[in-house]
Image (cartoon, helix red, strand yellow):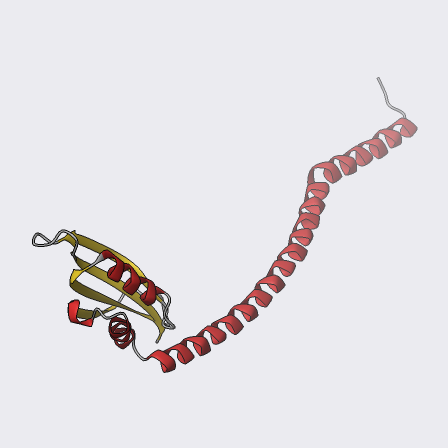
Length: 172
């Protein structure tokens, strides 16, 4: 079977068209889809970046405000230890405190200093203890109770011996 020139030309043109269609479908089309997908992701990531920059500015402003508030609280109240001693005097339990041991924690976040104070209180009523702890948590100095151990006394079951660990976080 002999193919004529005209038919040869049609076959060559058809082959070229088929090759172009196949190369578009398997090479060029996936490449263009990937480019479009990446362009869409670029827009999304640019928007996320601008949101992060805005949040960073807000964070820095809030951090500065926190430093100012902490400095004011520290100026008003002094150290956490002196604040706890003042609260003990006001709540009339200073005579019952046998020891106050401050410790600076090394596990505090960067830019902060955590001071923990272990307080041993002896021969106190539950009401006096709760009043003292309530005053400590509500003071101008930011404090929280980390650990509380209460035992009744053998000589008088209405009285308690207590060990309290109070934590105070400050900017360093």
